[in-house]
Image (tube, rainbow, N blue to C red):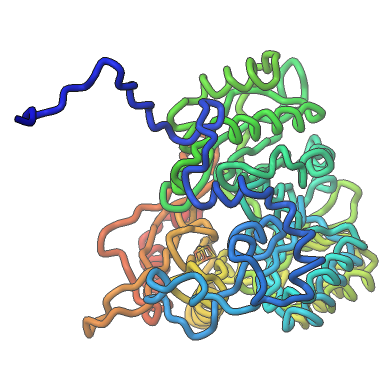
Length: 552
Ligand code: SF4
């Protein structure tokens, strides 16, 4: 007779805890397909195959693991096929969603471009990218319609002027954000640029840090004029009462579907130690980061489990082998700083910040901008993390002619509140994950609001996102819009947005940075969006007790 149950034998081994895929705890075997791709071949190696094989054999010959995996380490994503609606995004196979062209992200650390670099991007856009060029909210420029056959020549031209696409995407250290006014601001005490340059020189393209659990976003800036609370790591300028100017370390921010603001580690870092500390934090992420589930792999999840005290202890003991200096909190601005308009530099010249609409530019526009910048005596352009751009080093007498010249090519240094505060992610035009259109809707929204609420006198941020991934920072806008399908008045499923209200970053101490409220029922179809935002804006204008009362 068979026994009714099988008792555990004394020799049965206890089941090993599943863990989260942390390398430092011995979980080295890849636990998901992305980890397998990275283990099978370091993604940086795919550059060689692109130049020597795929560029000659064409799109159809590309190994799918390279195409949808490793190519990202060189800034290349396949582009969404035109005409596929957002309702099919989640149901189609990747190969059904993509066409044979690529989005190419050019990493522009610190957002700093010379005229020669700007001109090169403009020419590449016109020659190889059907004149596409978008300024992203990570200080990058993205081109579209790129063919694999053209990549060797594109890299040759970019690298000839000191630009690169290395680790512009992928599970690696992405572009390092910097202040667009680094080195020229009257408010800056210490320029963080040397630390950015050192990190790029030492670690970008370094195979030791090219296989992280997920992307790793950095910012180094004396001024808190970027989205420092949404990065994996940020260094924000602070004066230490004994040690002088240095940087305050923030860790573990990130938005997407489980948003979390970065937290201060409570340490003061002198500028020449930033690269080592940055390497230590990247090392912790590489070794202890969660690799089992992609949606739990960002550094924020590790920090949430460890807390800042343990994170600091591991950083000091295991990675730096020394204690860090306790530091004070930095003075944070009362509101985000976007640098739009005309401002004095520390050397008496000026910088001029101007707005395209929702970051959309073109090769032609960037080429004309390069000519203008040069004609008005400057060689320096900076991109901002708000999809805007600055021209530095403008003499007093050149300011108004430059502004007029920029206006003539579609860049406005005195924009409306709507144009100034609206950003949009890539959206359904090119992005394979998108559910809704964003850029065109953003342009339409700005035009409609400029017409209907011409004299709107407050600052307002509107962030339009094509899906829950929040590339345009849904949760930290006055009006954050998350693309999804919604029901219209006739009961039909159409493109629309979940609305988040009252989020923000960069609040003064005593106030709270935070996420906008997402209320059930706070949704608008894409068609009703302009009227919906107009209603919100009028409601704010009618209800405010003074001009100082912010939308949030
Ligand atoms: Fe694409 Fe979504 Fe990111 Fe927009 S938010 S760029 S649609 S992944």
